[in-house]
Amino acid sequence: MKPLENGESDLEGGRLGKDRERTTRSGRTFKMHNQALLSGLAYCISSCSMILVNKFVLSSYDFNAGISLMLYQNLISVIIVSTLTLFGVISTEPLTLKLIKVWLPVNVIFVGMLVTSMFSLKYINVAMVTVLKNVTNVITAVGEMYLFNKHHDNRVWAALFLMIISAISGGITDLSFHAIGYAWQITNCFLTASYSLTLRRVMDTAKQVTKSGNLNEFSMVLLNNTLSLPLGVILICVFNEVDYLMTTPLLRLPTFWLVMTFSGILGLAISFTSMWFLHQTGATTYSLVGSLNKIPLSIAGIFLFKVPTSLENSASILFGLLAGVFFARAKIRERS
Image (cartoon, rainbow, N blue to C red; front, side):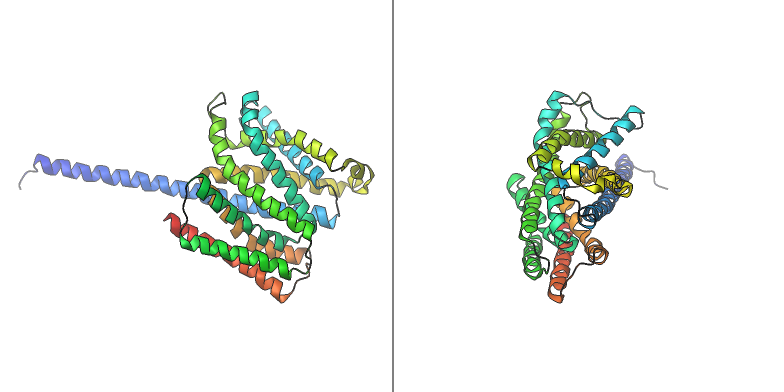
């Protein structure tokens, strides 16, 4: 048998090296996809549950203090994260003045996003809220294009156009249309898009002013919710919710406090999963996955809260949900 020459031996070794590199790369890619899938699923579950529970508190209990609900939810998050940090279960960065200065602008957007969501849920049914949230995808896509020079193909823009049409037709055919609720929801769309676009950039800046040079999800949750507390107190005074809280009999019901506390735990879950998901993906993917979870959420909202609807409005809602699916498919093809 002819012995192998040096060139042939090197070629074989090069093949083996490339195979190993390819295997390592595919394993890393598979792990990243799993992380993105798991974080996206966790975000969907917590997001859907949070909207339904908030709608239940604000509508079924007829609770007219949405900012106070937001403040209590954030307080629960701070207590849980601080307790876990105290017992060494998790680690969080200390809240330094430099870190607070960097994070404060995005926190103002975060508080505005939560408050406007509360106000819109008070007046609009869950199904229409989910359809109107599609406007967030449009704003986010435009923001990514201008802020990050990210270009989208024609299929993505076609899906975004369908979302706008579905939101307009849904509003026109909504039997329980409320102008104030729609105004709050449109404002919420702008704030949500601003939050997802700003958060990734602020994350990178915030890491540079921490002692460890890192900022994990729990640190960001603690930072976000802690800074929201004084802002929430100011807003409660501005919107004069104190007088209502002093007179409402709901605060004397144990079951009401139980539901409120559960909503606080869900608030912690959605804060953590949204940041975890943004770490694994991007702003547009973050918002498009929020679109996909609207199908079960809309159906649950209609049946749980017995929302009056018509054939035209139901068709508009379905059209908007399908536009969200079409948008997701277009984004997947764009990324491949």
